[in-house]
Length: 187
Image 1 (tube, rainbow, N blue to C red):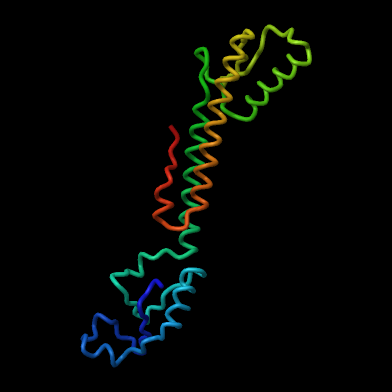
Image 2 (image 1 turned 180 degrees about the vertical axis):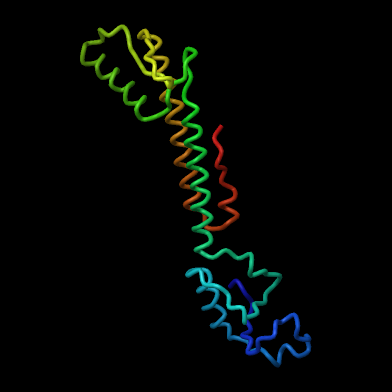
């Protein structure tokens, strides 16, 4: 359970303004079953603690307990930051031969198209063209194209895999501590 006991105040006087020796008189202590139901309600439904209730426990500060709704909101925020960092990393592109190429599905598709075309033509293609991020076509020899394709594919696949793993870790977090352990940066 989150709380050891819950006292339902039947007075509107804040607890810190009631002398300690009078507190027992002004509160009704809930049963263990009621405390458990309340804890489940707060945890599962994201309920709020009424301002006329006092929650007690072994050093538990109920203001630091994360409800499901708060955890979902924290995850959503972290996922947005992760997506922005991922997009920023994609925008850096892939550099080869002194030029930068878009790190995206379009470039990946163009590489695949050239490979398919070369296969269909029986390996007769000697010059390959890929558009760089400045929108200029760059010419590659077969050897350069092979190096470029392998390097691009490796960087792109690693980045996508890292993003996917981080996204899954965020979505699978069950506590704020687990969520905070997930790094949203890309190296």
